Length: 135
Image (cartoon, rainbow, N blue to C red):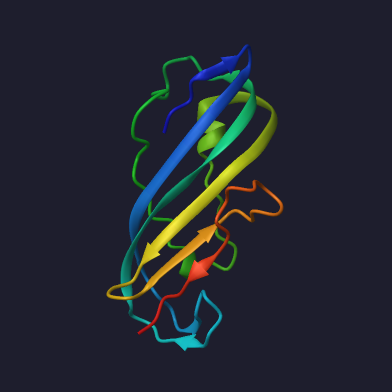
């Protein structure tokens, strides 16, 4: 994660994620049918945002580098908590503008799904969604 100041209290935030996942039975992300539980894979991705606010410079958090690893156990929670990193890095927040985002999920041979910002809404260079996870 990198939070360099852009100007004044305006910060360009680049957030990168990587990790592993296991499917739960249900609709495939590409919408072409059902997938079983138990397909293992990896993911990578992140987003860029513009944050206007007051940076936490108390020393209680590192302003550059790796954030602690966290398993939110989302499939087991009816309303999982969102990523709250922003509240750790800023003591006050006036606005957050999401500029672009995207994740790539790898599920084995010939099984990749890209979940990305909508090129019509967010940015003309965004790839939108493509591919699928299959058994």
